[in-house]
Image (cartoon, rainbow, N blue to C red; front, side, top):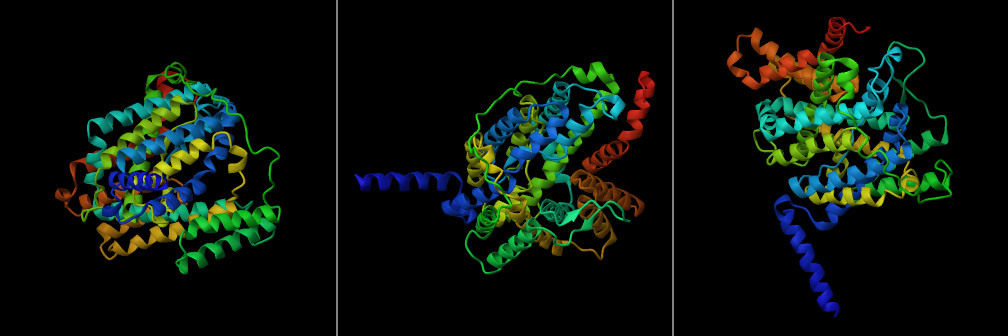
Length: 467
């Protein structure tokens, strides 16, 4: 009997290995499992953070937490099965802030004046636009039109972006009350800070010593220490009954009724552009890090990644928890050896299991995940060696792409600056033949993106609405 069970288990593992192409990708079942757990632990904070942000729009945090985990789980599993890339999805930070603090805020508070359901309707609409662009092949065509050095620059910039997030999450960098720059280093002054430094030391030592599952192990060790010394209090109830009241709470007509057609279209366009290029950057960066790109810098099978991601925007809005997108924190799993979609499937399963365990997820402190993000940022930044900074046509657009992502805390702005500067430099040097026709289109789209504030004011004046 045991022999039959053993053979059945081996056959199941072999079937999984065949489906996810373990041999071709140079990975194993255990490696993918460790990578999936690592990615989940690094990005599980979204179950707590997303509801806290959306609460500003009047959305029930308890219901939002359950829906956040549910949608992330389903989409991550879909991504893994459809694309075979180690990319997990969840509610995207940035767009959820736009929903909570701009779209759903009263006009007298500087917002657009939509209802919470209306704000989610905008997300559904921009997601549908992106989905159409994927289905007609335009999104993949644009990705293939981007020069290799810019794709590599995007990966490096996202690496610095992740590193910066790690420092911020860990509490090592804060917004100062005064000073010439909007960030400041925090010298250790609390148990949480000392724990962060200890966590960083543990992470680096384990990684340098090539300890198996180093990143996952560092999170577990640091979290255990945090619980033991009382930095993270253990809640009395580790299980919470889920609510799904946010699902279906969206209204696609509200934005047109409140703002008029012109402002509504501009709003949808700017959010669409953010979703469109954030995913391009994330997918390129993850594939580069996992060494899954071609010599031309292309991502094989990217169409499946883009399709699931575009569905994520629609699903997130329809579930009332904002756009879901490919998470750059997936890089943590890649650093742990994840190379296939099984990593994403593991992440998805853990998100589903976490639905009633929100208090337990909250036990993992940023002092444990921040150091991992810092190390992952370093690993991605090593791709900079493939960029020729001696050539201004390459170096300047690359530099703008790389530095503006962390400095503006916005991936799309970095990509836009790099694309526009690339086109301008080529144009000035009389090398128009080097510019792919789609790069002209993208550069023009980014010009509109950067001009959204004056355009919104102009459209408000045209429609007679108060500015």
